[in-house]
Length: 156
Picture 1 (tube, rainbow, N blue to C red):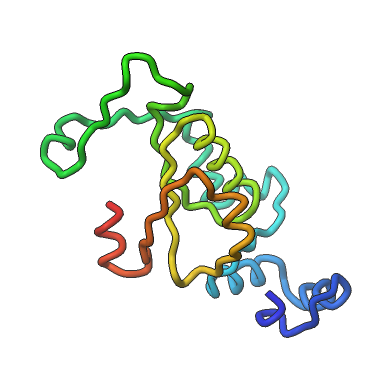
Picture 2 (cartoon, rainbow, N blue to C red; picture 1 turned 180 degrees about the vertical axis):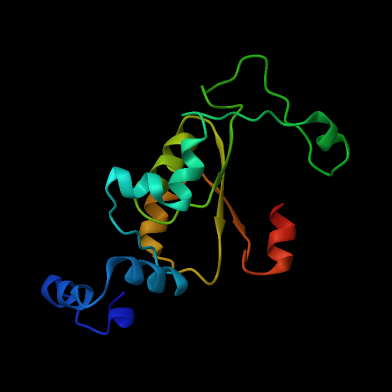
């Protein structure tokens, strides 16, 4: 982050560097460099954004069951549950694309409760070893470079 902002690693220096930017331009530039950055928006600003407009049309929770016909035509196999699951989320599969603190912790919690959590990682995204140790235990790792055609094909 300090390399991107070209400043020292202090609150004062980083605040001054950020103050030179328009918030939306800073968000766009940081995301283009693969950095995790999101501008704070009012509820009205969020609803008028492309993502906000898309989300407004969705129910609060959306569950899409797997199509058995798709499974039959692919190499994907279903997982048979034991007659009595040992943990409450034993039948839940999660693809974890998260990067910043709260979301990886949610994935870890789901894994702790029995979910099969597959953490999607990329060699191009910055990694923090101690953070990974804390938030990724109980998860399975899958390296996929989503900016390549091969990576997209592998995932989908």
